[in-house]
Image (tube, rainbow, N blue to C red; front, side, top):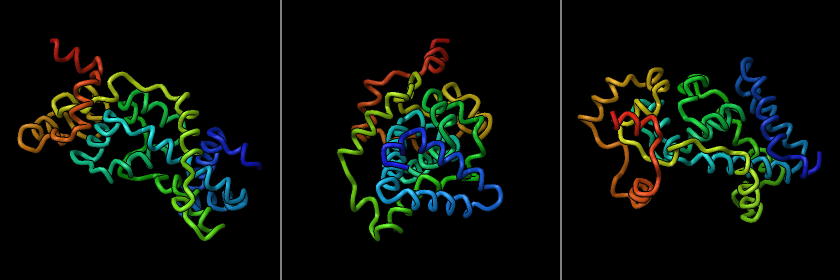
Amino acid sequence: MSKSELNADTFWSLIDQAKEHWDHDPNEASDWLVGQLVSMGPEQAKTFDTIARVYMDLAYQYGLWTAALVMERGGCSDDGFMDFRQWLVAQGKDVYMAALKDPDSLADAPPYQDWQFDSLPRMGDYAYEELTGRDTFQDFDPAQYHALKAELKKDIVYGEGIGYPYDWLDVPAYLPRLCAKYFPPAQLIAQAKIHYPSWNLTNPEIQAARKTAQKNKRVTDRGAR
């Protein structure tokens, strides 16, 4: 397989094939994927890692972070959101694309606490290190990263309001199915009354998002009633 053949389609195909080994032994899934990438060579392994990083970065959206807050039942740090996005990529193309279009669709995904498949997006780095003795961060190629990001973004449809950092009281309207599965609205509202805000409101990025991003229509409709 040549370098040009490891693209978005083959990335998702490798993720799906690796998942077929998971039920028997989670380590078998990771080992299988590393073996496939090693057989393709270092450039292929590095490309796989770069694609995984791009998809994780494209999922850096406050609406998805809100979903992670719900699925974690109240707290999700910067590192926790990185882990969440890694888990999201590992669920496969259909779940990933649906979540970027509507984070509430994650109510149909495998239970988050099971952390199924979460190691798979890291396997490109493991294979590259096995082949070269170096990690992909040491040989990171910004030009490759930005080219892939521009290309992969073309296939993504971001849902309405996904860029807005929601208050706790907005969350049941924005993510009704996800709340029903992970964080009942009554419990969530109680947390809103007695705990810290969902976001650091002194953060300039949060302040800018609240000024420029629009809320989802489900939330604005609730406020209009």
